[in-house]
Image (tube, rainbow, N blue to C red):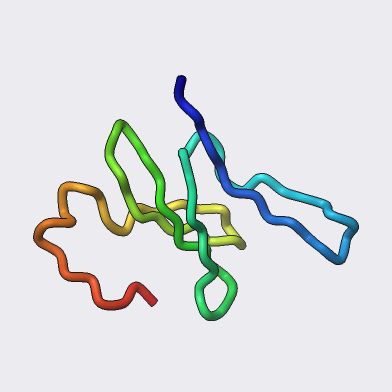
Length: 79
């Protein structure tokens, strides 16, 4: 059995109101960028692990790093 996860934003000041921000991404481990406008997260797509970004204003998702590049890339800092 597979578990599909997605990311949600919870507004603690609005009595726990939540908003789903990814859909069918198998998303996990989300962190906010320093300016708070982007979420960086790990996702699984087609059996491959990827690092993606989600622009909170536009809801656009982009892939930063795909699993097959991990062996050749040396990422010191994403943001």
